[in-house]
Structures are given as structure tokens and as C-alpha cells.
Image 1: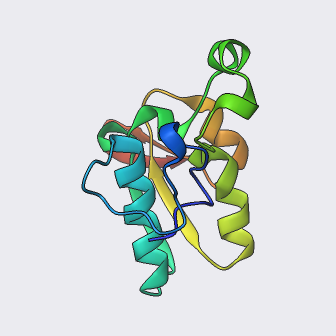
Image 2: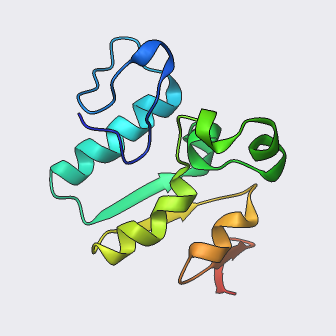
Length: 119
């Protein structure tokens, strides 16, 4: 599976344009799952932040300062959501700890006492 839209420049020169999961990490596994879904024609991705590889989903300012972009093999999913939308792919993302996703969403729904509230 080609996971280069999300992951490149792995240690030891491991290629990501034809990636296999024999020794995959959480982030490479998640990238593979998304790319396989898209290859199968999925038009909607339903993702629960609690079950995701955090380093695949987002990088905060402190991590970006510590590890320069040229050395980081992962392009966080956060930065790909708009591109997916422009290509007709909807993303429904359930989050509970990171508000950075609000900036890329069209709609934010808050669960308040088991009721949905459009905020």
C-alpha cells in the first residue's frame, strides 16, 4: 500500500510507496488502513481519536520545535483533512482531547448529557 501521502523518510531508508505491515507501528498501520479504505472507494472515514496513533493524528508546537519537519516522517492526519474534503472524502472525527481539529471541521457537534448540540 502506498502510504506516502502520510508517511515518508522512514529510518533505514524503508520505502513507503509499497508498504507492508510486517513491522508496522501504530502510525504506519493507521496510514495503511486509511489508504486501503480510499483505494476501495470509501467516501467517508469515521475515526475515533481514542483509538488512534496520536503521533499520526497531530503534532503540537513543542514537538514541531523539537523535531524539525525535515526529520519527521509523518505528516499528521490533521493536515490532510482539507485535502481529503477537496477530493470528495468526508471525515467524521470523534475527539475528546484535542481542539486543533475544530479549525479544519465544517461542523462541530458537542455531546452534552447524551444530546447533540451544534456549536
